[in-house]
Image (cartoon, rainbow, N blue to C red; front, top):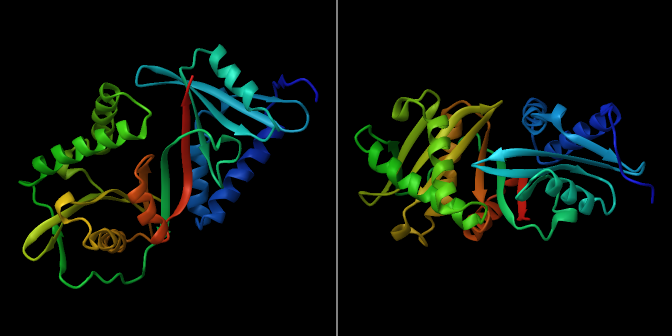
Length: 283
């Protein structure tokens, strides 16, 4: 095997990398505008990445600051047995953990724990809500209580995924909610729902329309714990599709944290394809 060397000109690598990323999104059912939009997100900061090769494949790595920690990221790896070099590079540049974003399977990173997934499926043209379930807009008076519950659940999900400490998870939660809901209940493009059955609120939904071309993002489709095991989980997915069409979009995208096997199983059974999978290890 030839020695692995860093390259100054990334042109040869970049074309192939972008086409492989696009191919993964197309295979997951993305429209061409959506695939291109996801590519733009995937290559953010690409000019600062370090690219290396031994002539048979490629490695692309970088470091960033995330919630007070230096994080190494392996952005691309087609070089057989190049993972060791990539991890060593991250250590040498101060990384405390290494993350990867994957499409199309874990490959060389099967031993990295799953920290999260983005999933998507096309919404039915006329989703039918289950009999006995009604949906209404969450009221502004209900919003503070809903917000407190959502924030607590989000922090718990982050901690369960194993990527951050409770303190780091709280900081991330504060930042994320401030970014996504700068005007709270009145933030444009966001809609909040209450799901009711037998006169009781059994869960809530929070979606963002036009999140990406033709896509509604489901930030939360939550069935309260005391109402789980009654088939409402699948019903919540239908509510998400209904909300997607209400907002004029064609597909529903969701995020699930690592460790949430129940949600992953639900998404598998309801046809949500994995667009991106995030894995990481502590160094």
